[in-house]
Image (tube, rainbow, N blue to C red):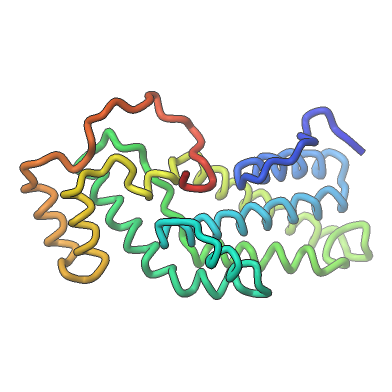
Length: 224
């Protein structure tokens, strides 16, 4: 069955999957359809997996064939994520400090990896448990509980993707700012020292080359 407000041409983008899931959730509520609720769960889980790969790319600073092959192996996405999550957290911390001194930089999405993994596990449980929702032998309460959980996850993802995830590539940062990043990421300087150097910097930390404004409400799923 097709609904006029549900996109039929797929786009490989976490934002597209999140919007699709929101439409499916609304239709599931209207029609009290367990099938649509399952489809919404699948879309949300796919959106999270795309975001997790984005986090890996941001942490590594590039998308290479070796990383892609490692992520495509069974369980590989989560193994690679565990390896790079500390660096991603450092990059987010650095970006927040840079934004504090340069408010013209678009606010970057700072995804909480543990929250994304918790949501992914819950969605996997829904997708793999055929008797947890109405219409499949379960009472009404679990169906309503799952609906509320999906709405919470969809709202969380939509709010995060309104921020410009791509800023975490530090596009436009000057060599001085990148030198500070290398020192901070390798533990050569502490967070208080980073703040002091940002505050005392005599040279710009962000390129003054023209950039498009206003910034889009939704940043790309991958930091291209």
